[in-house]
Image 1 (cartoon, rainbow over the protein chains, first blue to last red):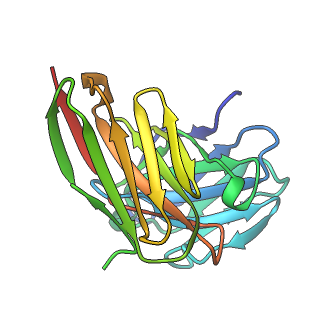
Image 2 (image 1 turned 180 degrees about the vertical axis):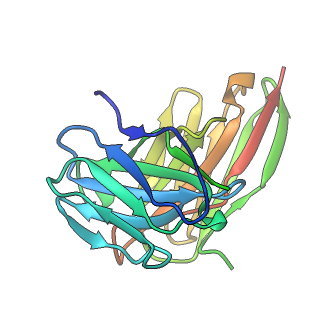
Length: 115
Length: 109
């Protein structure tokens, strides 16, 4: 597609369940970012991929969160043993270039609700 | 204190008014982004700045690197400009973006 695609757009799950969120970046974009946005707040950095490797995963809140990008394109954010505090909109963005010249293109987000 | 601070948090204007949203940051940066977020969550990149000034239609963004400050201006505001405007900086030490809390703009007809 022409833009960054995220699925599902909405996910409701129960506390303790496992969740996967998918991001399909713009074709050819090597940089991919995951952010989390809680209601009324600005997005919070989670993890950044350059190609297949996680170049910076320092924003992941704890070891229940994990993300992969095995072929350098689609990325999956995985959350184990979900907690109510994980409820947020999870945003994915991609960029053609790394660093100061890399304009970001955002997906519509995946809204996760943990009951 | 947040690394990126925006003001005001909320802004209500009448159609046609000139709007200014401010962003101050405390870290060294390689670029600053202004983003627009509409209800429902979609984020659109408006500007990416590393120096000076950029203009696109009715939108103008300026940055003063020495003062660590940027402004987003909207001329002849319109109700369709109503959205959250977010300032984000890319730190020189890495590739992550650090976001401000956003400014909720409401333009009334």
